[in-house]
Length: 238
Image 1 (tube, rainbow, N blue to C red):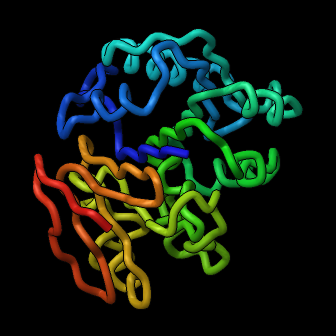
Image 2 (image 1 turned 135 degrees about the vertical axis):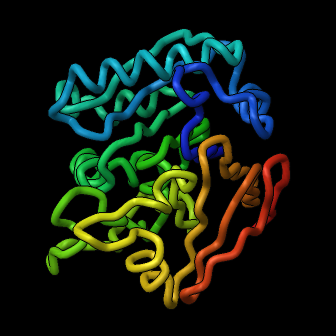
């Protein structure tokens, strides 16, 4: 399996694939000329939103010169066909969205099991990239989550990687949730005993043949400290 885990694959403000850091070339190299693609939703119960996002991603890949032999959406409407759809795909796209909602759907369809031994490429977007990890750092995102003692910030993921990703860092590092600063008051304290890699849009993690490399700007949160470990145009091998 090859996986490409992005913050966002798109140019800010439009659904074209971001040319930064060689993403389009990495995607083309990972795929057959005309792949069969499966878009896996983040929320199984919002079909109109899912279909719109799926079409944006079809456009995104098209601008990188990639057209699909098949392009199917997997959500609550056809969840019972998950195994057949995964087996027939060469590219599995994991949508962005609300991390716990998406992970609950992944568990419902047994996606972790279905991806074991998958010979194709998994492409993650935002929440989909976060949920690819074995242990997922699910940051508070919605009002009430930061102060809810029952909200689990660490949840079981797909197990494609040990690397925990924080996407959209150029914006989300400044977010305030329930009166708490996401970076200083929540994520840095949560990094005690853990390591998170924060990516701005345009950066991504490529995993292939047991090796993982970040491309583009990347920040590391570990044991309460934040440091930049790669710049735009750079790379970091793990």
